Length: 456
Ligand code: PXG
Image 1 (spheres, rainbow, N blue to C red):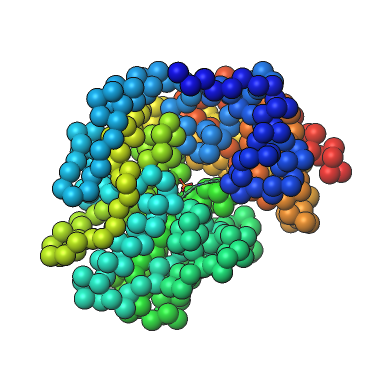
Image 2: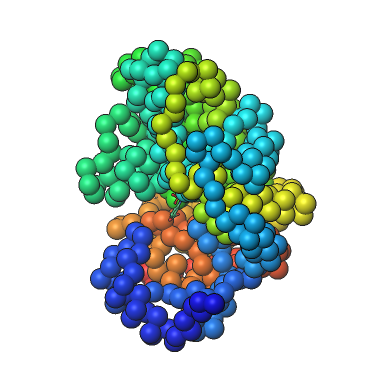
């Protein structure tokens, strides 16, 4: 059997720097500092190659919802690999695991989303949505409808199309993005952009930017609007209550499709199965990834509602799109087992009624810290806004330095937290215990104290 090497940390670091191009990396800086080598995980904990124990406040990359080390998923993968390691879903073929997962997702997702198209990543799923939306409007006799409206600072993936769909300025700066027919409106970021408005007024104003943009573009050109229920990578931006009802009214008024990217919010992150339930959204299409398999294997899905499905199914032609690994039987079997665990162990319900509220009140206890301008969150996701002065509040200039310092102090003290600019983010495994939440928040407070000393 192939044995993975067990080198010491320095050897890994030099081999990694010599041969491995990381995603979203400054290669020179990474080679200088050396990669962190993670070797093992159990529950909400990780261990690095120096034997340090780290509490994973990010569930990997917002994905390891059931936590690390679940043997049932390993056994399921081994069984499926022995039985049928691969077959495709092209040319009229399917596999039992693929079919079971499609049926289960139709059951789990909100009413009306009855059809699943499988892909391998959130980016691929969002690319698929763009192709499907354009195809839908073509077969519906309105081929002019090609523009998809999204939000600034949204993250929808990293391929040419999904990065165009997203609104990340740093990504658009490279390689001539966004591609044509993607348009971005303001995000509903009350802490950053609310000014003197009430939260309710700001929510309405941010939503009405959609109507203004539709009018500017010409309603006959607009195909769809896409949004994450909570902008995750953008900084855990939770819209005011008034935002989504107005967004949905506008989508209905102009007949445009409403797409909800549940890659982060799906599978329990907000304390319900989907962010769409938490925010009462009725999407025409939904993007799923990450928590679908708790990250154990790559798999994603596009859930398609009746309106779009009828267009696809009633058309006489072929939707010319798909991937070698669409509906991969091993990935589907592992996802099914992951969903069974989430269901049988009542993990989502526990986040909703117990550990989620516990995390939120613990997190809000940090709002008294001199560096914390706001502590917000819902379910198992949260954010701390670091500020120079709580009066105002006055943010740091340049943005991002305090966040990086705080993130490094967290890590030195055994906690992974992410920094997006000066917004500190947590999104731990859904199985995190109350004791681990206490440890997370205590470590965060210590890191905040150390950061305050550094920036004062
Ligand atoms: N949609 C959303 C809402 C996401 O958060 C994707 C799509 C793309 O999924 P893939 O599987 O193609 O990565 C994501 C991914 C971060 C970070 O730094 C977040 C993501 C990916 C990488 C880094 O927070 N989210």
